Image (cartoon, rainbow, N blue to C red; front, side, top):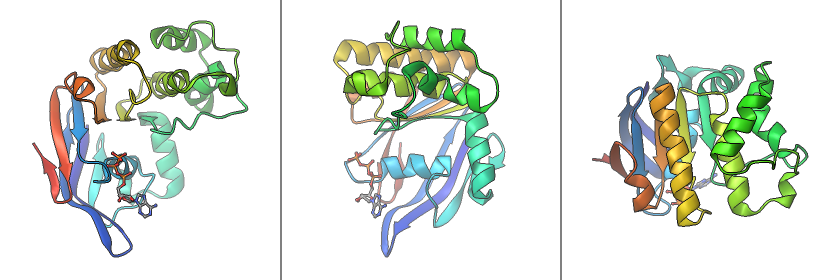
Length: 214
Ligand SMILES: Nc1ncnc2c1ncn2[C@@H]1O[C@H](COP(=O)(O)OP(=O)(O)OP(=O)(O)O)[C@@H](O)[C@H]1O
């Protein structure tokens, strides 16, 4: 499903990481640990085509995303990817249910029942009509998680999805993520500092400046 081959990323003269190899199969859940600043978020952005790479390739479901133009990358993300950003990126002027349903709206296939199912799954029942500014940080994080899963993406990229959550809610969110991976045979790459969250993965790897350590 996901094949990262020999990836190198630099900002100016400074290499963030090099020689990164990572393969994640269909239905596989991989957690990436690593020191702060080592480039975990950057790696997820590179995998999604949201950041450029300096060498190497990223292949998702057979498509080499690194060679697509920006429009093709955006369409590819819409159809195949669910991205949970560390900073949520919830749209402030859209209600919670429209935020969650956005991937379906963009595909021209709205499904408000599915939106409700996801809001229940992340323990936000009835919050659909509210605006994001009326939600807490942990609630916004769960909106972002519901949005990333609503269109049943084949690849889920999750950047610290439990960072703002209390242990019980974090566990519930990890249940939802795991369920999505198992039920829809999605591949999932989770970036986290939480050993508890990482323990839910099938495999845990560590990102260093010189690549991935298993
Ligand atoms: N746009 C940018 N321009 C220059 N340097 C950047 C940019 N974005 C990130 N960096 C640098 O790249 C490195 C990797 O950052 P990144 O956020 O990917 O690390 P991380 O492992 O996810 O960290 P954390 O665990 O603290 O979230 C850091 O040194 C950061 O300062």
